[in-house]
Length: 321
Image 1 (cartoon, rainbow, N blue to C red):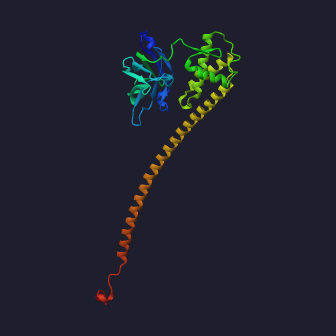
Image 2: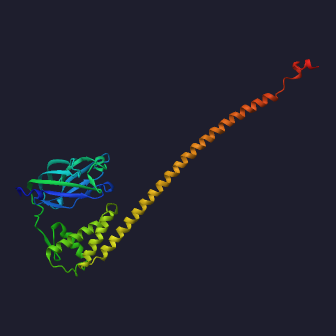
Image 3: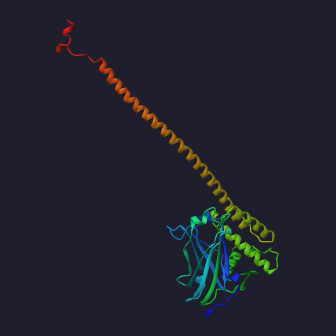
């Protein structure tokens, strides 16, 4: 199906993505949550270290979410811009704009060299606030060939919870693995039920992330969310166990980093002492060399002093007789 997209309210054309602990991220690439603009489902793809071994820039792309589920021959024409937000009023945010036909062969598009990493991470740059980097994408879908992903109001019922089609398969699997997960859930209001299910899904996603990507604040928020879900009837012993494991790994990571720092400092001190000892040893070697030279000279003088004046065959001693 071919169709032109109509205009919409400006705020419905934008999506904001806040990347926490940007400077310390170890992942080669990360994805944002999915979002819907103009009936099309999208997500952002970022390479925090650059999309190239030689790159020293942030790489950022707009990606068609769940593109593998779209019908054969789908295409999507979109104009979009990325804004890397600068939080210092007198400094400018970084903004780049482009236009692209997304399709089966090229389902993501963007900028490999968006902003230099050294500029993003500079203390006075204004791009990072408490380690967080904020990215705003604005999209105008110009034309669509094939079906739209989903309308923003569409949802599916899974065990009494209304979820997005993209979440349905995962939620079904969740109930298959843990059939008693919501048997004691007491809230009847459908909007609240959906909200709590989204909190649960976000909590599971947090636990699935690498401990390196999770901050102490993330863990604290996760325990608060877990307690709230449990208080309202969700049975989540299995999830608490996973969260405790992540917390233990995070503590081991922190302890390991602290120990590595201590060892590094101790090693630095020892190397400094070794350097001092080597300098002293050089002085001792030089002193030994000097004394050896003096000894050789003194030996030569002594030998010269005790050497005979001559043999009796030379007639040297004739004058004495």
